[in-house]
Every structure is written in structure tokens, then in C-alpha cells.
Image (cartoon, rainbow, N blue to C red; front, side, top):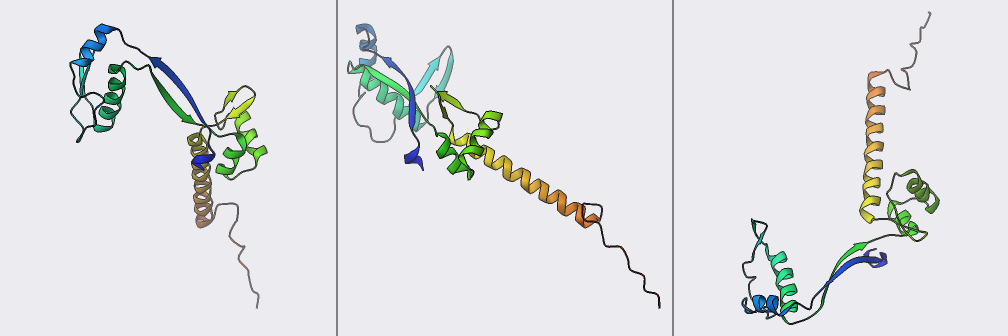
Length: 162
């Protein structure tokens, strides 16, 4: 399914850096070179110090290495989106019903021009809510029938004369 989901991205482009900033990065040494174990990286932003984990360290070192080499770098955020047919297939409902859900606001949509785009997570959240509601209804129905005050009243007693 992931291969069927279009990737839409937002991006920003940075660089090339001014000479002074390149000189600062040059003092870090080893940027852009392959690393064995992930080195320690700490970031200070407006007085707050944070030690980065291995995944963030790798990403930051990659970015800084490219900028230090004089490259223009584009950082992109990728989001996966479904069209209504793909979302309906994921939810197990018809295309028409999914469009109705979207029109009622039960599943959030974003428009790309005139085309609806839906996050897979939003479809799966709707499926979970529907399953929870069905399970709750079933528990309530079971509770009513067990207590004898539900939609299915106990049969009337029969009186045999004889």
C-alpha cells in the first residue's frame, strides 16, 4: 500500500553559506567524512542545551557536511497522502461513502486543486473509532439482554391449567 501513496513534500533551500560561516564549520573537522559509531552532538539554541540522539546527529552532520562543502541544500518534509479511492480501500468502504465521510468532516481532507487528499493516519483513526463504537454498542446490547431490560424482553411465563 505504501507504494500506492503519493509523496507530497514541502521544502526549504539553504546555502551556499557565507565565508565566515564556512570557516566556523571548517573548525568541526570530519564533516562529510564517513563516521564509525555516531559521534556525540550537542545543540545549544537560545540558551537551551540538548544532546542529540544518533538519528538526529546523523541527519545534522549530513546537512552540516554538505553546507561545509559549499553545497546548496534542500531540506524536504515528506508526507504521504491518499486519494479518495485509496482511502476507501484502506477503510474498507465504498468511494461514495468515503467522500460522504469527508464532506461531513468525519475524516479530514486537504484539497490539491480540486482533488481530495487524505492522510492514511486519519483513515486508520476513523476505522479505530468505528470499531470502538461498534464494540461499545455490542457491549451495551449484551448488558441489556443479560439484565432483561433491553430490546429483547424475556418471554412471558406460561401458565398451564391442569
